Length: 343
Figure 1: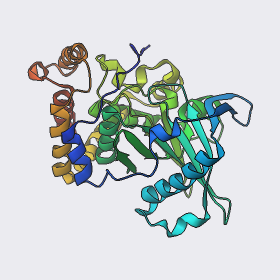
Figure 2 (figure 1 turned 30 degrees about the horizontal axis):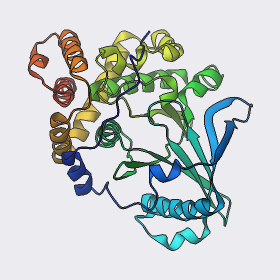
Figure 3 (figure 1 turned 135 degrees about the horizontal axis):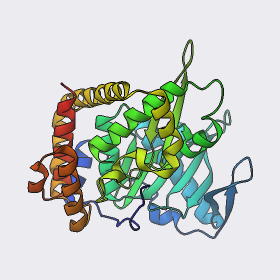
């Protein structure tokens, strides 16, 4: 069982990373910041359809503050979705704001409603932690998933990632008769490989979702990370392997029952090969990002030393000994693992 050591330290965005975000159109001026949303008047617990506590609270504001926030939040949504085209905002309404006290980021979740057809969407307002930004960028560059987010000062705006939360899926869907358990096992193996290759940690079941897509004969599944706070932060190697978290045990058991060792190696190699292709196609942008990460401090020195030793042991090498930062470790781990994908 893998345990988180302590509450994660928040790291401000350094100037090199700020320049990177500006260069690749991730930074923009925002009419509403995280600090603006913290001026709440009160809140009440948000329950799910079964009456269970969601760990979110619906917050409310003074009438004048709510009017200003509502207008600004619809503009933020336009910046995120339509590159700032405000012609669509007249029929959009920010009808609910939720706040989560649980975890590291303490995010706000904003529900935007289209008043013409009552369709709704969400986005998140968070504190702009450097670890989270590096995690989002690495996900965008190396995974099958495009990430849509914006940064302004100490505020981070993230698009909602649709899917069934991992803990809900394991509890309510994993044993359903129609579920293709082999495909779920395959996707979890690939997800496990992606997380370890780029050192994305803390993939407990509530930090990822299952995206279900109907196929002409069956269903396809994709496991997607939704929380990037623990990008290359922890010192324990097992923190970057979802298979070692207690609440993922049911899926791990499924993998051991349905997949042979040879099949697991095949899926791991497939995923590393795809990551290597993405890395080559985005090599200039990836190099710019890694240059920032290698010069940045995103973890305490003792965690860097601990992970350095454990990665040396895992890869049967001493190459990690020369690494000075978490960025160096991520770069070398990618080189070693994605190189194997070619064999």
